[in-house]
Image (cartoon, rainbow, N blue to C red; front, top):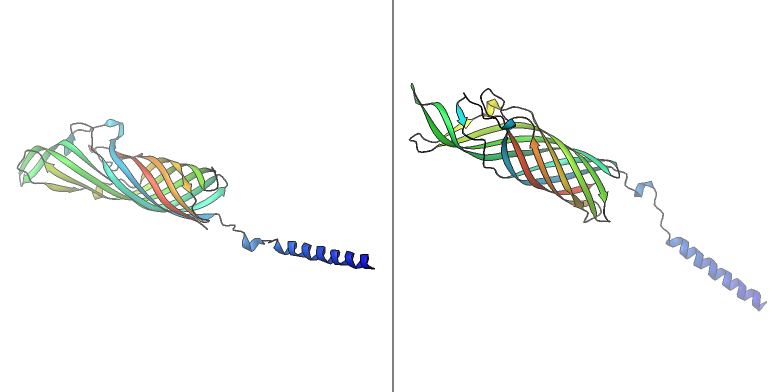
Length: 249
């Protein structure tokens, strides 16, 4: 009888222990698992941009003549927002909206037939400081792989639609009595223009849904900002860094 009582106590104890272990197991249903493939990213792009001439052409016969094809570029800050969709574990696509621009200086430009006063024209040498601004619609293809739990390595080719809206030239005559003046080229802008780019870098995932984007990039505008007879066919070449904040839904 005593043995039966002891065996009963052991059986009850084992049953309670097993029940406790079962209670420790947590099960998740579909409501607890995230299925969203969407994300959003805010990106800034500090960069150095320079002017290039298509085929290095310096046309003659217009209002001014470039004595060489050189220009002095400058640093810019572009920015934008991307909407991201994950096609799979290694490929995201995105479309965005942003703002870009360029500013550069061209020295020793020969200005032809400038009307300094009614009926009086002259030719002189000047330095031009040009600037252009545009809205951007980038399309990106993010090929990525996880290095570890917190780092993703990324290669991101992109094509971007640009919608230029402003083009100005600050004209500073050299060794001339003619006053400085501003040329407004807004009406001559070619819209849209297209840019291709490539970014290399990664995303640091510092929280469950948040990531810090750090990528180096290069981009080139394919067609001219201004497409007019006897006008230089100017495009842009930029080198910079993408710095951004990404949120995955």
